[in-house]
Length: 431
Ligand code: NAD
Image (cartoon, rainbow, N blue to C red; front, side, top):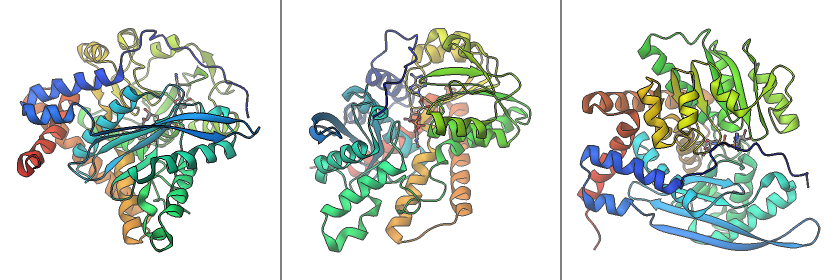
């Protein structure tokens, strides 16, 4: 077990309730598109909320009880789909918000999945690999038939990774019976490639964020080569975004994570920084940049800002401080609605989460298809398909926003809600 790491206190002392934020965003879009009250009512709460308290043996022989969540928001478009988060602040309302965003994200990307999210309330950094394995396996067992390859399909999120997904898959495979064992690999996505994952899945969310930035730059006649950007969070989404954007000639000038923030106006090498993070677990103390405060970080001048850490990190003060042209939400729900108003008033364009970070679930869908068909697609095929889909979504959101004179978040939600509402209209309410 490692020592408790130092946590950077965020300024947003009074954190808003994430589910209320999600509802406010949905209501705004529902009003803009005149969503039927029946569909709005159905979507206002998840279909299923599962909470399980389960015991796990620790390395020192003691037993600890963990609280796990799985919230299934909606499955009108297909099986429930969404990540699993290991974080000490996981809560029912947080998971409910994240699950609802998955419903809208899948509808917007036109993939045949519904929305779900799950999590376990604990800090994974304080546990050994063997404890993490036992926690994951026991949680999978506790979920039982509440997950399944045609019912509810988890994926990685904050604090989990491809290894976590492989443990989950293996546990599930070993309880379904020998004959079905190899037919259920697609019970999770985001697995390692050796255990049935897709090429391109690990970098997919960051790659999707970069596709959005490329399209925006093309629209604005803005050159990415030589521009600057900053990233909050240097985990899966943040590090891949930084690495891919750097390849296009953009310069990473500030970055931060749970232990601290750093900057260098001359540019930070994303590859070297990633090596440092893999060794030390954080961007803090990286030698190619100077240490700054969280406050300084939000004042750094950079053309593009990518929040890729946790939700509700951009409050009104942060929105006033940011000196950028574009905010691309790699993280889910990083911007408070009041803060978004400030950004838009200041002429800063916002590409919302359900569009910007949808690359991950899009390639998860490709992984699911490959597993079902016992296929392994080449990296180029995955990349081409992802690029085409991200560009299509970008164009659809842009056109919707222009035609209806709404901001891009309303446009993204509006498109998603219209698609869901059409299906409810056709199918009606059972019985
Ligand atoms: P991760 O666990 O790999 O990385 C999270 C990063 O955020 C780490 O660098 C961590 O140090 C940093 N962080 C945590 N708390 C912080 C704090 N208080 N202040 C500053 N930094 C902090 O997680 P991830 O998978 O990269 O997910 C990041 C965000 O992207 C989340 O909102 C997640 O829901 C969203 N997302 C992830 C995926 C995916 O495929 N992994 C897909 C879509 C959306």
